[in-house]
Length: 540
Ligand SMILES: Cc1cc2nc3c(=O)[nH]c(=O)nc-3n(C[C@H](O)[C@H](O)[C@H](O)COP(=O)(O)OP(=O)(O)OC[C@H]3O[C@@H](n4cnc5c(N)ncnc54)[C@H](O)[C@@H]3O)c2cc1C
Image 1 (cartoon, rainbow, N blue to C red):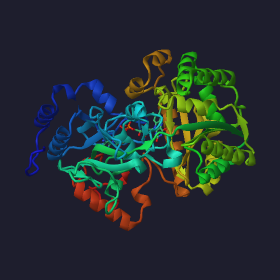
Image 2: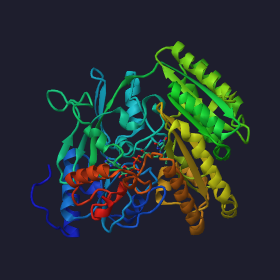
Image 3: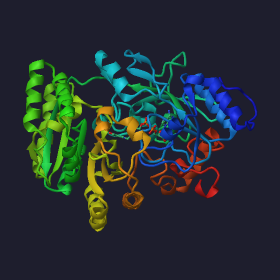
Image 4: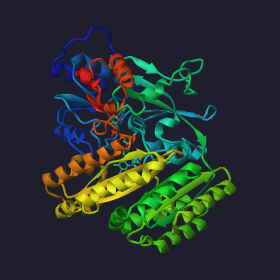
């Protein structure tokens, strides 16, 4: 447990020695390579500097690390796998300490009787899914596409879309309880926790305290342990894909499929993203994918038939200018899944969609957590998505406004080799995510090299620095965010990129500032993320 006592100012070397002592030499580093890696996310390097990377392996170590850094007056930047791109964990002050949560990755307890599982925050979505599958269990939301490496703690700190999201909403909607380390090293536990106080089974007992820490971009405390709800893994699944002639027609159909509540996952691309996917196709990844498609089916013969269809469907079944939509339905009975899929077909046909090979929908389920090779474009270009959650009724209008912006920027983008695509996703029965994605020639960061499989990385060229293209992308990204703000959109991954505090009413801002004052009075956790600045009263 952390030591008690009055805050005192340790000098830098005292602090480093203390941190090393707490976690052990093997879980502490000041190596320049580690500092560089943790100092940038997929979008940008921080404006500050990192002093050290500390990787606790137990709750006690974590609490002691947090308390020691608090005494020093420095900032602490929690980091899961680093797979975000909105400046959440990058340093913005000198001598920030990077808190690497990836070694607190245990699955603490699976309790099928109570239908809950407790993990450490650094556990990946893929490891949890793999541990639950043999028991016939699953979490309702079960991961983002980055879940091979991205952590459950990171996913709750900034919220997630994707696997299971159509039926069960975002990652935080599957939370039962959290164990949080506050800035002074005290430990806060949420939820109804049973007679021993350590067997969480239900989220709601009074005000929803867990909710305060979900989507907080890590500014209210460090998630140490997380209890999630379990469901029995759905016994049946089915897939269909459709092609639409316009983005507006696609979004109208997606909105109606959302209202009907029939898709466990649904995602769509524009022609730009389809072109990127085609360019990325490689034989090696296709062979691996086909193996996974075979393995996913209940019998080997059925697997071969499905894999054969994938091969015949190839990657050329989407017309160049079309918008393909991929829908996955799941449920307890084959009949209900078939009925859901039939309804998706009816809605798509009524909206002008044509059914196409369901290859991609099938592959999403066969390889739910693919390698992270898409952190760079097919020719090693930099990649940066920016997104907004829109009300179902507004999605076509938001898309039209974005298209007008991109038409205005088209000539400049062409000149600088900047290309664009869109990813569209459904979340629960009441929001669509519109996610423009930029690709541009620019040198990569160490984090890209860490994320990509070595064999894939070896095939990619190394691009030179290209600050003028990056500046244009930065400006365009901000204009996209301004359009989302005009429509009152919400965002995941708020961090230091999307407008949060400034979009809240004064009572909400006051409430958040008071909470922050209680849990982190000096503002040590990810300073200024969410737009909350404890040193600037105007920003409270
Ligand atoms: C190829 C690719 C595909 C992706 N696909 C999806 C997708 O399908 N859906 C989706 O929603 N996102 C997706 N993402 C975005 C991103 O991977 C996710 O948002 C993911 O949740 C990030 O998790 P992480 O562990 O890497 O968190 P990090 O990036 O390390 O951290 C994210 C934020 O959480 C904070 N944080 C991390 N751990 C803790 C903790 N224990 N306590 C307190 N704060 C903490 C950090 O300070 C930071 O602000 C994708 C990214 C990539 C690169």
